[in-house]
Image (cartoon, rainbow, N blue to C red; front, side):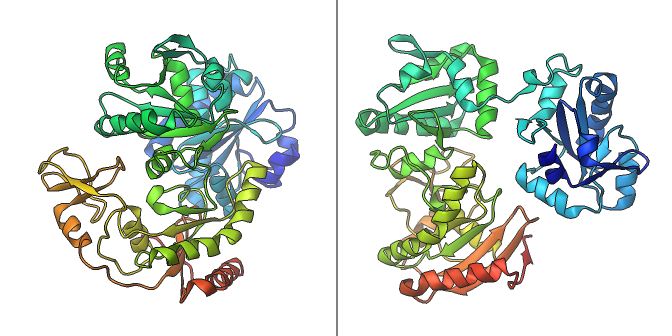
Length: 480
């Protein structure tokens, strides 16, 4: 229980305010549920009585303890809400413990219920689903265990043009495996699938990539029709339960999504769509994340870890490359440590090279002046005016409904409205490279940084900025 005591603090409180030594209170428990909740949250108010009923009737007797982590606004609300609960809690004034737990378990909404093993390792991140599906604890605790992706993949059945196969057979002789989460009813999927198929047949298959279609279609007929257009393998549509577990294991929240694994079924990147779109010939397969992420390839871990950003949208290509090279040796130790500990890096590094897509939004978040849209790295093709309702412009961030549409000709998920396209054809406005740091896990904090006068001195400027951040010398600002 030492790991749990270190995680939750040395002291917990019971109903009525009685103090409990954490190690003693959690001794001999089969599992410990960490319950993130708040009095003001309607879904929490609906779930808490059910969880309390299940805990009192069965789960407590079967060796489960629960610890409440409050997101209440004041001590009074905490006291009132905790008074309804039959389990333990971290004291309300232990804000540092709550912040540490929020960050460790990536809590972005409540109620969240994470269930831990006695050694502090995760039994399941989706404890709410586990307990709702088994309120009597008939399968507790082993039946609640969240299977690693590799174990789920070993269980699935694959369909191909040559019959039934397994994942082990599919990766034989391959460099990488891509899980393609998609559906027939999804317009972005219908746009991306032909492009991915073209890349696959032209280069990626021959260079060692296998693709497995993981369907979110609504019925077998839709799956069959859609899969008939695809040149790779597919997970058997009938295995809906395993499909759900696979989506949960990789945190799939929207489609189309591509998760890339290596030949040993270890996760390489969950942002495979951006990685492959940037390298459709597969020259960098299996697309291991780089120490310095380019934000044109997606948001990455911006919600999970503090990120140092270097804005250089208007710099010459050779300067952008030199700035990235200056950041790389500073970023590599953080990435290496994350790999060794199998946790998120303490700090991540990113470069913003385009005044389009995510770039303008991140620039706005840190209060830097906006730049006019810049030309996309690939040629854009004009589509029918107003075609494909539901798209958004990567320049102005506005809905494209009813507007002239210019779309990437190489399959990127990139669009300009007519106004932004015209602006992107004009000479760019010069802006000196500049640093910033965004720490969303710290309740949305951010820090403005200095300009980087030249690439040759970039490394020392970044080092000084990081030292000031570590020593808390920077002015913390709050994201809106």
